[in-house]
Length: 254
Image (cartoon, rainbow, N blue to C red; front, side, top):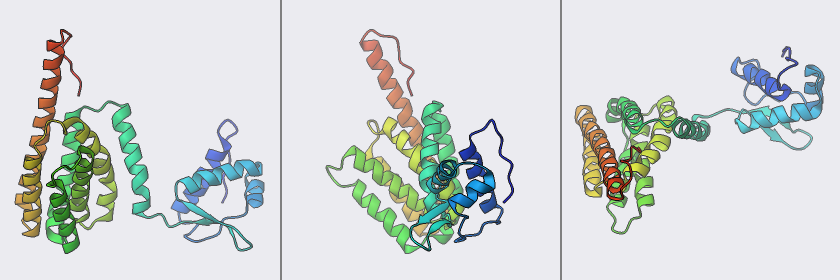
């Protein structure tokens, strides 16, 4: 693993990048033991603490795992799509909040991505996917269910729809849409929405998928998207009305 470090950069970041590149290129394979800290320090001509910091970065990305003992050391990990979901969700949430993405843009992206899963979900859905969706619909209809629990169930319902497509790459890509965008959208619309209407739309989507009717499922998902935009408009109108009643300037918040 030959790599020339730049003197003006963070050495640990560069070392982590070099090892990551070697893993991606297949020069280091799954379960292969990395050279020891001492060997890596000599190879990169840096101190052992610098190497240790680089290995910590790789471990945080689930690219390597460490084991103690005589047969221990750092080993190349098999990164699974499920392991990367958390990073995708965190990154998507930060991007949305830090860049103040408007509601309509987030809604458009989320439903466009989810609609891409519908034809595959209609063809490939299994009994477990349908059971999960039906269970969440039942949960959403329970009297006294908190707003927080309803929103969590809403996310679980749509996660089951996405997973029903049977495509791990899509499931990973849509982690940002379902587990990041949707909770932020729920925070805005939960006070205005009709649970009965959400239940009816969710039920219609599940029925269509059970019948393997992709066109009907897409139509019901489009209706849900339109209702979501309607809710956001209603929330903004209420905020403007309250601001005007209080004698302040009309609000433009999302």
